[in-house]
Structures are given as C-alpha cells and as structure tokens.
Image 1 (cartoon, rainbow, N blue to C red):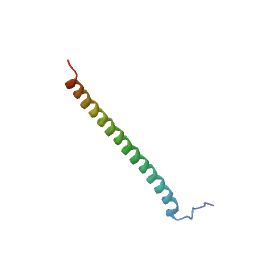
Image 2 (cartoon, helix red, strand yellow):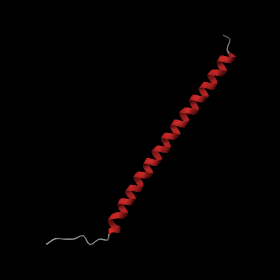
Image 3 (cartoon, rainbow, N blue to C red):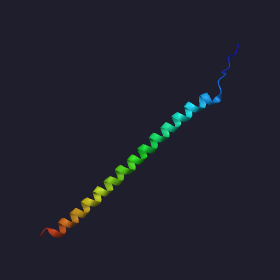
Image 4 (cartoon, rainbow, N blue to C red):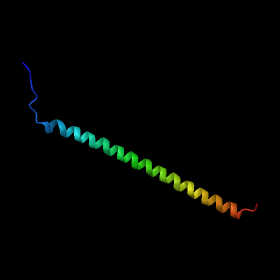
Length: 61
C-alpha cells in the first residue's frame, strides 16, 4: 500500500521560502558590507593621497 502525504503544499513551501529569504538576506547584507568596505578603502586611499600631496607641497625639496 502506498502512503501519500496529506499535508497541504503550504506546509512544505513556507519553510522553503523562509529559508530562501534568509539566504537572500544574508547575501544582500554581505554584498552591502563588502561595498561599504570597498568604499571605506577608497575614502582612506583618497585621504592618504591628499595628505601626500600636501606633504609634497609643504616639505622643502
């Protein structure tokens, strides 16, 4: 005798959708964090270049 699952599809689909949403949220957060780190690195690099230009202009050759 074959047993069939008598649960509605919602019971199976909802946990899957919740897990998929959690994975997507994690990926979005990681991507945003990565972009922030890259932006911070660019800002720091820019500040260092400004400081370097200032020192070159101020210090005697």
